[in-house]
Image (cartoon, rainbow, N blue to C red; front, side, top):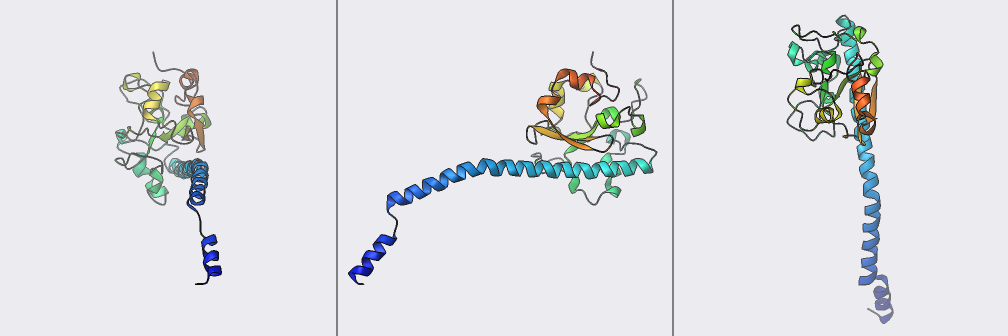
Length: 221
């Protein structure tokens, strides 16, 4: 190898300092990009969950058309919404939220027990048909279960002795911050919305609005 060619070869390489600078720049760029990629992934999961709930909402409406406006029910009535809606959907992949870390349960969703048929032994207004819900667009029908809530296909909001629905107790059952500091909700009228927990946790809103209780009044003592 000639001296001239050897000189060219040496100039074409990186010094240790230059290599460290390049590595530092790559690490800095990765540190800047990863949070953005994480947010994009979270946003994609939230969009997927909204899409799943929208399809479930359409299936619930078709079910209501076939069964005199009845809303799909729970295992307490021996007619869980999971099985009732199966004929109206294209598969069971709708039942799980892609961000749900609880792998023990087969579905990530549960229904608001205020819109289930009441216990005959307990006096209560029957909101189990969409036509009986005063303002269907304001009442939540289905939401995502909190990470540790895996024992039922419905929430326990109606009876205060079983949990009620004050903010702390609501948060114990619903995955209120799973998607971008909020959660996805399906309403009785079939529309879906992503709502931030900072808005919903207002005590007066949860207890006096129609979001949980279709009647719009507190059930807690």
